[in-house]
Image 1 (cartoon, helix red, strand yellow):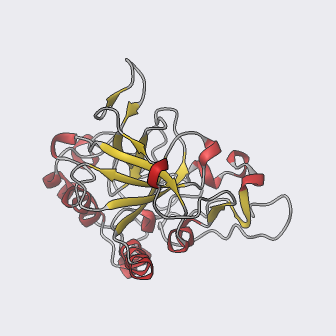
Image 2 (cartoon, one colour):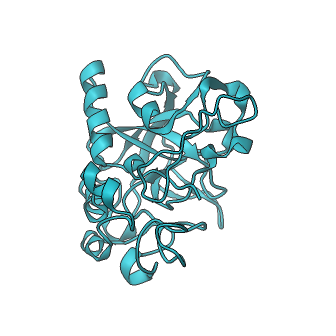
Length: 269
């Protein structure tokens, strides 16, 4: 099985290092992240988001899709953001093989299947490390701390709330972020800001209609599962840069990459 990579998580040690490199290089000040935005046609695209209560803009890449995620909503990967419909985080028959973390996936430990825990103090109930814990420890990441960081930076709110997106727009993908995902589009914009092309929010975070997805919401996820962008059948190869056509997923430790550069025409490259 292939899994999501834990250093994609908002606030991971490696993600903070990449943010610092980009911010120094571009004299900018943003957070990095990955997640879900719209349909598979947009896989690999990057967006700049201004969200209410978040101290910096988010510069994020879409590597996943979801029928419940509209084009005016971004589902950010954060520590215990919710395992979603395809949980491979915990509760498997063979932790370290079919799931990433030890133990059962219960409401008391992980919170809601969509959204994870509601409050910061509940983060303490999570396991610290993946079942195969060596790489996570070596990287200096801890799931409890990653969960808490999401609350501390305002990308998730107490009582399970979602921040309002105030502005969102397509931007160029930074090299430092592409290094994590190994996917890049050939139709990127030329700038890291969206300027007049930004969509300004026309409302606050709410369902667009009964039973529909949310609009103008920064939501969250962490399903641990190999994302949509790591399946070659979801990729529009003509929109991708050669050598960066598909997301590079991880083994169950959450850090060891699966090399998708096999070098043949019909493979994941």
